[in-house]
Length: 464
Image (cartoon, rainbow, N blue to C red):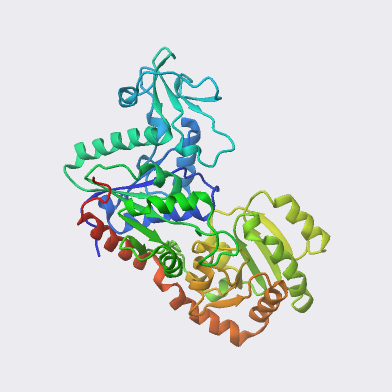
């Protein structure tokens, strides 16, 4: 189904290479897949970010993403702070026009954001230790050409809105009276935009992670951030949950709503021809950040039992993160240096998983689990803890073995079975095609186009 005639924007807090793991991968993949589906004549949606880095850093990000084939064109990726400066110095005209009288809060520390010539554009309040920093109304200083403060904007939400309104006016000037579909990839940004009552804008919110705390059951506690988000959620035109299971849990808790839709994130194999001969017997891979929630230590401990029964087995772990040093210490302490390797990040995860015999996942939770989907798309079985939401749903129809959450011995046993039982391996490999079907790019884009058509045919839910 083709996408409706509209202007399309993907809004993210940041899109930085090798940072934020699956979140960045999913948002960039959505933009590429929309381009392939014909959005903006194959150029894809605008990619808008609001991270306050330097123009040089943002250009390097765009260059790296472009070289890796992760964006359709550099000019389709824009940043608020790159555009906040005026060529004559100081803040851009549209930003100065939105400022009100005032000055900085003397009780707060401020971070100066400069243009390419190092002239100040804005000064941002530094809100530390407060998870609600994005809701502050602390003054943001707007600088003139001489560097002096010419006014303030009250809070980050207002700053972001001013820029988005400027972008929307540009789109209107270029494309006429078409609906504008903003796909918001960040919960905090979504919270700040729920009062944006422009009648032409439709706000579609994409979800990337679980909404509950441990033990991650449907009735588990939620932290305050999610509680407040759900209180405002009915003002989005649609919410895209990545799995049926998560939507079901949400509706069992808060009641059904027409805005709750299921649109899976999808990944591509980039036309790569994957064959059985690519597979290295005994090679298991992981693709995830080295962070506590991924529980990579479980995988390493499980592999001690694997190599005792399958001496040729190896585990290659792709990803970076704060637990790098302690995981290497664990590998060395268990004497697994010849079998388990920390490979760092990779810009070709499809190659990594296609050359393996299996993918291993030990996460405590997943919004969807893009690495699992990548493995299924190239026909490689998965061994995973049975956790919500992605692993449980993606493997419910086969393609891998689910192990009771936290059962390290069961994990070890499952890996050995996949590596040493040819009949089991062949059956699981055959099941991967159907298991990945609902989340392949063709089906994901058809579902997204259908949801967009539904929301543009109705008034914005944020109108008074």
